[in-house]
Length: 322
Image (cartoon, rainbow, N blue to C red; front, side, top):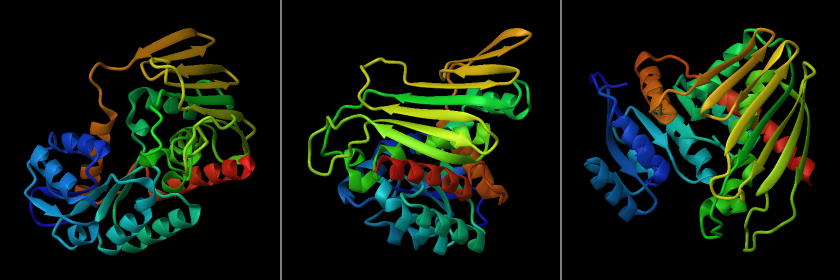
């Protein structure tokens, strides 16, 4: 990192996630968002004007050749591998939105490179910074509800179908199992340990369009090495306003239920409720944490090896769907 008292960050990408991260960086005194690169120069220039950035690059290669200390990669999923590997080879620290990459071979290479180059890499699983998810993990790992027997994570969203958007395209995302469900696989692996068996099902095709992903509604069943079983469910076609995300876990001595707003713990002592604090922003906390790790040269909460494990579950699910 430079000798400057401020960590200089470059943004690669100029879409909605990039805007979210830029707003987070604006609240961190130790960080400066000083450059942006995008495949579309007009988008990059507009992004720069919105966020007070004075340096605009036409591509990520030019940005990586500049004097930024770290980069945030907020681009379509199929571009992550090239950009992240180029950043590591340029000795830049990286925060990359999930999924880190689309294939386990690519993830293994990033694990190797990050260790070899000794750079800081954080994969943007912002749920790791959700206070209720964090407390649920602490409860399970602390043995408060006993050894887990069963767990479940649901992702039930209303997503406007637009075959022209990259996140509906199979080639750009490798489907919803990789691009959406991998974050929930990560959570269940942290709750129940390594997965041993994976079996997946998906609903019939309902979305028309060339190259469109048909993994809009999937169920992935898991059996873990320690004996627990679990399921991750996804539906991108839920009605507007439908409850979006629920996590449940049952152990030998109790259970936990979380919907992102309330965590309910059930034990022999009764029920305990925890409400999320008003105004908490997991994206902001994760962004500040990444900057801190860069400045202190220490490992992150979610290094590439964790993403590799979750991606291996996703690949097993894809193989099962065939």
